[in-house]
Image (cartoon, rainbow, N blue to C red):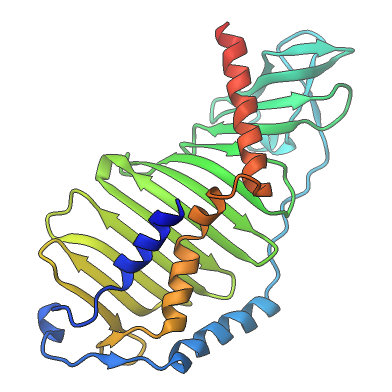
Length: 299
């Protein structure tokens, strides 16, 4: 995995002296000073220090009757509030009137279809969820799905409005107020990575296997304003453009910009190369629980 990361970094920045698109072709390359990008790093740090992350919505625990006699599950009161026709189902075991053990629960109504795989400890102890599928939002997630403001790594699948399926690995780093995503659009022949900071600095990178012209594209933004772009084309053309001023300029990116992009874009690759990573282990444990449930039901 580390070998792939180093190769990726070389590909991203092996662009000096390459030909570029027509409006920039005759321009000389400008060498960036580290201070040019440092100002955005400092702005991002300052914005982070002043920003507060939104807290998850804390709901009063509600124990709802299921269609199985004398067997309650934990259910958000928002289900009934948003859709009075909702009914609840549980396919696992029950004890003393409550769900217990590993199983799948369903919340189904005229406007609702949500299913989750979770584990109940018995009595009125809140369950731990490992999987959730929301039909309305066309999305499923696997991971530690506890509703709390802590670091979380998720496996996610989602069908967008164009019916393109996106597979993602998402890490919410609440400690540092950052989010990372590694995604794949298999049907569209594209893959990508995304980093976003609460301070406003973000990086988007996408590579294409089916585009006849574009091979790779990377954008660095601050508060939704494009600062720098890198594009690599199938005909061999590459360019790194500074858009931070009024007119675009070809540049050789400074070392601190290269380091920033490389560290953020390949962060998840590094995380997955460490078998002792705490967040990764929790998500893999959740995946194991989901597979255990599947094997039990299939058997």
